[in-house]
Length: 144
Image (tube, rainbow, N blue to C red; front, side):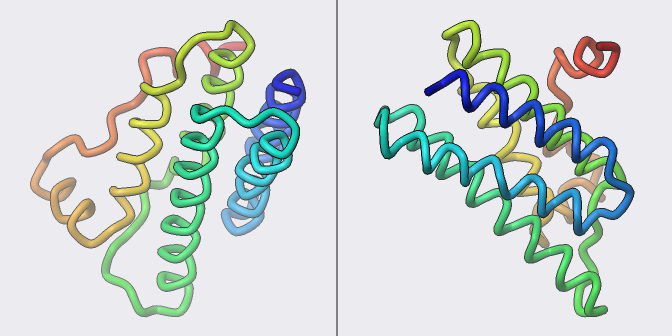
């Protein structure tokens, strides 16, 4: 079942990179927590539940911020590359699952990227604090 996660995460990553519109990129991203939820019905694991929770929470936070920006109700802006960073995180998580390695670092990075979409996260970034640093592996993933 975990191979299904790897396959789906890579499909979602590819679609997010190909898609031009941010709302559609985020729609694709929502599929990540959906597939984890379905896999857990057959192969429950606390790490998968943690993965599901962080993916779903991140989707909700980022989607909410996109909607408030679109409605003109937000002073908080999103990084221009947020969707690309989400896609790269999915690829990195897929690699960790494929290699039966921990994806805690990726989830922490995802959580921080989501925090950047909050008022306080944005405020801290304006102060020059690096709230959501890039994964070290990002450049390797981009070059594939």
